[in-house]
Image 1 (tube, rainbow, N blue to C red):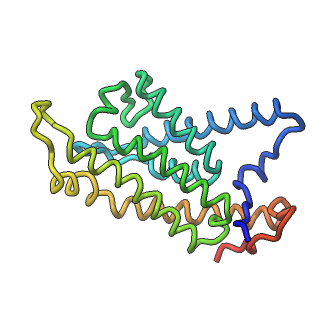
Image 2: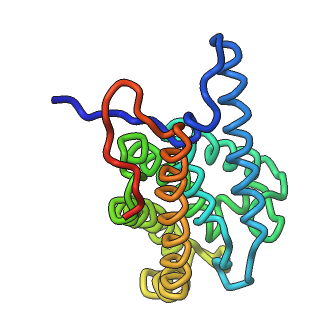
Length: 218
């Protein structure tokens, strides 16, 4: 048996157009909206050296879950490119290639992969239940840290070739963020299953071709 693909929640809220062109326009708008949401929540920031506390991770996980794999990943890839070109859309209204090569560049790259994976799993029904959703979001966070922490550990604060090191990378780039990440994870894990439950009640959440898992949130 092949794995059932249920699709992203946004495809039930904003259905495909009547033509390929209209569907393409819809998808472009959704990708741009995803990029805008991440850019907006990146400005919800508390300064912390060298990695600030921001709302980016919440936005990344939510965008991936809502838009699905390729649109979620593309939204974050666009965020990367626009910010790297100098637009002030990264945290604290920063931008430019020096941000990518700096302390937080690995996290930004990790956002792309995390959004894609979270979206891929949500398209296969993981966002219909809170417990599976928590597992998916934890995996998304692990991917962000898997790229962000080694990047940070090999970053040279003074630019003299002396790197931060693994111990400080954990102390400055992981440990202070654990509680905040769990809170963001809980928010997203509540939003998506609740959204599916609401769509089910209004008739939009009914699977057309194959029966999916019930859309209750527990």
